[in-house]
View 1 (cartoon, rainbow, N blue to C red):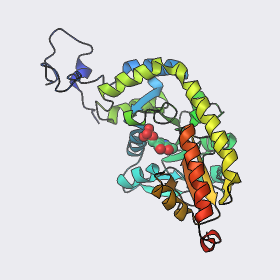
View 2: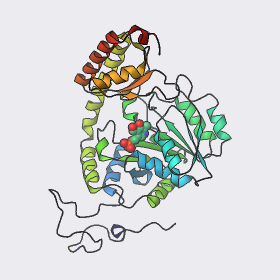
View 3: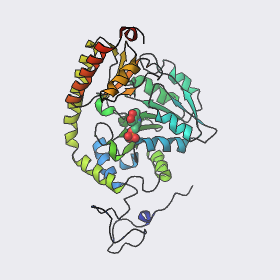
View 4: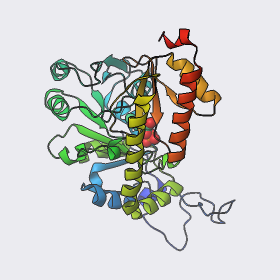
Length: 346
Ligand SMILES: Cc1ncc(COP(=O)(O)O)c(C=O)c1O
């Protein structure tokens, strides 16, 4: 298809008189001037990000959150009513939502009870005609990294695109799959500014891939998908990148503290190991009752009890030191108050 050619595609930069895009030359209503359309190619962010990540700007697609990249990947590679994608539950729900929205079939390749890829995953995928497989590592909601050799085997066996979603990779002690892009032309790596960067409200996600794939994503995206406000804030954040490790270290310390403290509570059955900024916790009491009681105390967590392999489990995001202490105190009180008949049934 012929992509939309925007005014800012045809003329780059600023001239003294800009009357090409039907903007409001008088300025903006409100305190800040956003009267001009943003750079549709987001050149400044890509230049900085390329340097930070050791890739080229041609390897980078920027989306309105990685959720936009997920949707565009499905739309780019799948024919509605005909093609399929593969997901590995329990995992991030938007892969399936994007597929459903685009009338694309979803094949399930469930993770093992310890939330790893099945031993025969690469073999099964070799025989699959699916166009995409989504591998979330560290996985949401389980928190663990998927084994590197299992992902590598899939990259070698599967004929479609392998999307490794690294939304939580900044909390893991493992090299990013972006370092392997030159080896695997069908590898796509998703990252986001929503987690370790603390910029979920901005909506900025990144897909790294081969220049060919990225060119196609850029061709089908809405022309101005990243707002001027987001581009300005992202550039400021990238300039402040040296602050990132300090914040990361603090969150990792808090994760360690919670992972040590939670198992000491009588209502906690198991704290799953985490490489992310959250912990999946299995309770030996009715987890939904725990969820409700936390909510009644003003603490909102994520109820994951209905997810495959996550019976009795809640997902707890690591918060500030004070929030974590409040959470632990509330769980201690809830454990003491829960009636014994609830405490014996899951
Ligand atoms: C695994 C995973 N991927 C992607 C996203 C979405 O990220 P974004 O805020 O960039 O759309 C999330 C958000 O929770 C997530 O858990």
